[in-house]
Length: 348
Ligand code: UDP
Ligand code: MG
Image 1 (cartoon, rainbow, N blue to C red):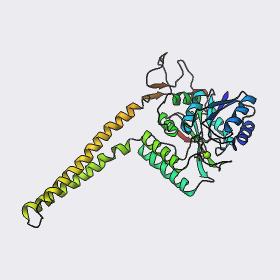
Image 2: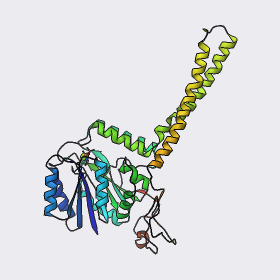
Image 3: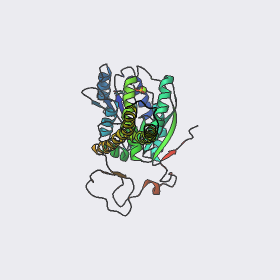
Image 4: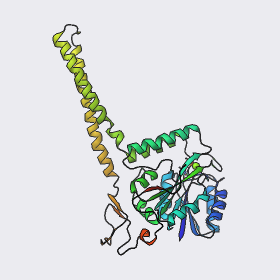
């Protein structure tokens, strides 16, 4: 079994030697490859990675022409990884390589995705910890897929999970949402996230906020549809108030001339305008979802059906061609189908 480790790297010259030595000792005895994706580094990172690749053919290197961003680098790594299990991790050793055996163990039990979940975050500011906690929960409540909270891009993917992710080619990428969208069987391992081994974060506040917005706008059309709700409430309130204004205008003499008509128009139109905006937002949301051209479904198991020889348009078929023996029926110890977010260990 080949294990691939995919590592996006941007200016991590101080961390790379340490990372390589820790990975070498953990991967010892396994058949492995490491796919580094150099996302436009401008320090000695490119040189160090090139040296490592020249010394060992199992160290692979892709270099981008410029900085395309962390998510693009992860995508390229997944596109070129050949492993039966593919692990994506950061270069700064915040994702401990020592967790790999545990992850591989769960992969061997038949899970398609193994997600280490951060139960603590060393070396991160209180603001980052709070904002991350709020963000994961907010996105989960807005999106129709349930995202596993406090899981970053440190993950193990089975080969078929990688195949499925490769078929999602949208421009604005949010890998954590894509994994949730695919809905494959996921195991969660709690772990304590350490601080960076060296260097500075490559996600300053503005970049982090942009990334958070990509997550929300790629996996929820809720913001586009907000004005429908607001429009309903305002229309109701506006028309109720309009009745009062009409009463005052027709049956009392307390009103300044002209006031009633201005207020009446204001009440009637503001709600209607918001409703119309909401309607447009809804159409826009649907156009947006179509424009992403995502597959319509993902098939993981198939029994007694003949699978098409050629790939279907906008469909991901991960099931093995008939006849097939599923991992679950071959191994009685394996957790049963249906439970997707099974926690393999207690999260407490
Ligand atoms: N990274 C990248 N391109 C970017 C930003 C980050 O390849 O534009 C890499 C970076 O070198 C690291 C990983 O992505 O290996 C995660 O970045 P970082 O550790 O800075 O993020 P944080 O852990 O602070 O959220
Ligand atoms: Mg980091």
